[in-house]
Image (tube, rainbow, N blue to C red):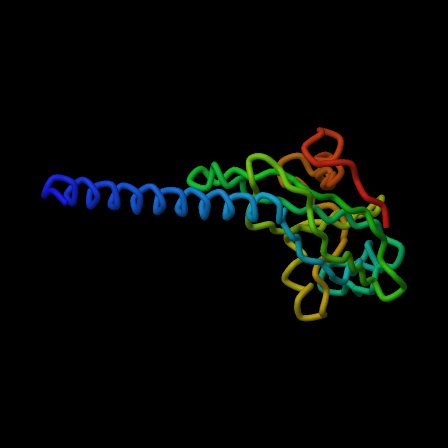
Length: 186
């Protein structure tokens, strides 16, 4: 054996190891990407309890809040786009319309979403109760938690400059704009 032949064998062996290492790394990255993509996104189930002001004409301190049965509730899930984590943009990935039961409670189960491109991560949910003549306003939340409600429907707040009631939230606006996929009905 000549000295040059053994040095060439050593270099060839190193190249084989480097090629094998690069191939293994590429295989691992490809498999990780495929598993991530094919797994889709699991959105958690949502449950809650909706109340409504029974005596709308009474002053606020005398309101009676009761369970709101038969109220429509739209539950939407948004998910973060993986390629846009720094910018914080998200999109609606699921929408379900359900009704409250006789105790004012609603529940929508979790669901696996089909894979998307770009991939999604970190789903979060929001629920919006709707009843004609009532307003789902944020300023009723001070009474909701202590009574066990996730939201309370009440009268529309009054605009202090005009004296006119403010228009209620239209939770279905996102659905009509095409921002969400078709609404599932439960």
